[in-house]
Image (cartoon, rainbow, N blue to C red; front, side):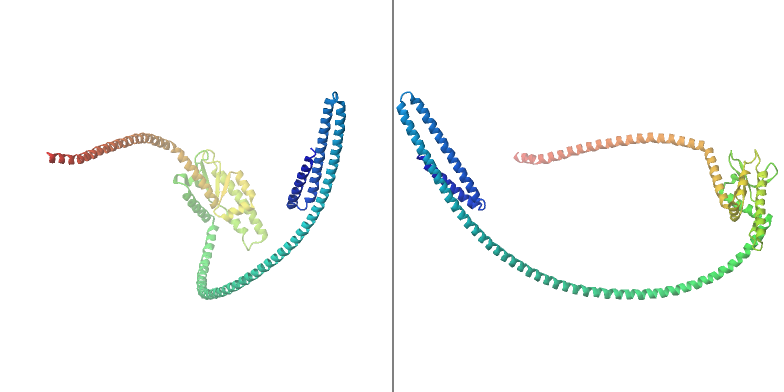
Length: 467
């Protein structure tokens, strides 16, 4: 056991040195701390091993002493003395070994510290050299890059200058062409403008001549209007004018059996027009006469304000009286409708009544008299025409129904015959397909027969030659 201790210590020291060398190469900064920790760990391991060895030897000796105690007390005492002497020597050896290890570890620490210091100085020197080389290389690369950029920039500026010069030349050429074209267009437009101005001036002169002619026609028309006003100033003439206008409107809107003119009623009164509408409306009387004397006085420029107001009141009274007369003469129970129509042949008079005399309109509605103008009468007539058309349609509804019934029967027969025809067509198509199939089969048989005959001819010839 004592002989193995130096070998173990040598191996341990060799392992520590190898580990320290590897640690120094792998990591210079942490090498010293790691070596000290490893050395301390190895020292603790050796001390623990020696203690275990000492304990094992002591225990073995004591057990051996106990076994030999009964027989050889003296030998045991000597052996114990020897063992104690051996233990003392072992403890001395262990102490010496520990001291040697401490001296070796201290020397190794100093050597390692010296090496680490040298390595640190070498690394610092190498780092400084590398920094200088890297800085020099970077400065050289930056200078080369700047020179290349400067050359590239100069080439780009030269190319851009050339391109800009070409673009400016092309632009100037295009601008010159555009200016020439614009100048030509301007001259053309000016020529066209002068031509159109001359044409416009000629047209204006022609239109002025036309206006002169129109002015002459207006003067003639004014004379005719004055004549028309004189015509309408007479009550009889005004009534005839209204009847003519009413007759034209009614004839254009209604069928012949839908109206009648100058119809005499059972009371002996003759109505200007009667609209023959279906029940429950019945026959509607239309009066075409209208008082206009006070209306003309209302707009007489030579009259004063008081006269105009008086004419307005008189006009209102005239209209009410006329409404009352229409209601009493043309609304007859059992013969005519419960309302009548008062036809005002002038739109201006109709607008005057509805705009400034609402009480007259209210009075007419209460008396079941409807005031209409040529425009509103057309709406009434169109409504009447629609009603008459609906009545005629209802009268013919049974005829239409019978015709539709006959048409339905005819269509049913047509559908049946169409289905039969479709069946026949489908059957004929199937028959054609079957005939086509049979034709293919027959053609195939003929083809096979021809092939057989062609194959049999050489054999017959051969047999005839042999015979």
